[in-house]
Amino acid sequence: MDEEQPRLATATFAAGCFWGVEASLRQVAGVRDTRVGYTGGTVQHPTYEEVCTGKTGHAEAVEVTYDPGTVSYEELLGVFWKIHDPTTPDRQGWDVGSQYRSAIFYHTREQEQAAHASRRQREQLGRYRRPIVTEIVPAVPFYPAEDYHQRYYEKQGRFSCRR
Image 1 (cartoon, one colour):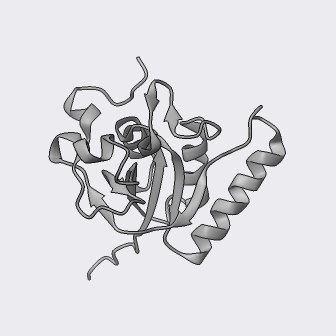
Image 2 (image 1 turned 90 degrees about the vertical axis):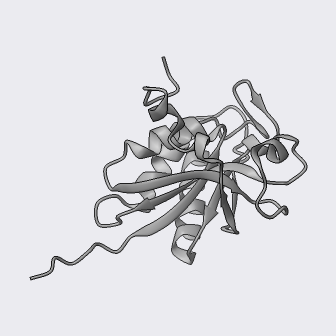
């Protein structure tokens, strides 16, 4: 008898340099795969060098394939909020530019509603001294980054950007 395969879903997040974001999300039980890449801009099939100019409109992002039976979208949102500062426009730490903006690219109406509810919840907690600037926008074409960016920290023998 064939075992039924789980129905997988996709989530896309931008929260600064995609290497660290990917490393954090890969550690979540229920995440089946990740790809780093570029989304949210106007240039088709951009290169890393083009995105770094800030002229493509793309953000460095992580596309997550996950099993909703194991991890909920809300749990992924929790990780997203935890791993970056959603109050700094176009920067995360030393990384500065529109490609490092905070954004949630939703794939379904349910994801859109969950993202807005999650953002409201964080705003109401009053945890941040500055307003949250995270964009919540529809998912648009995602362009995978070059191979050397995929699972970058794993290739370096690290599993986090924290030392």
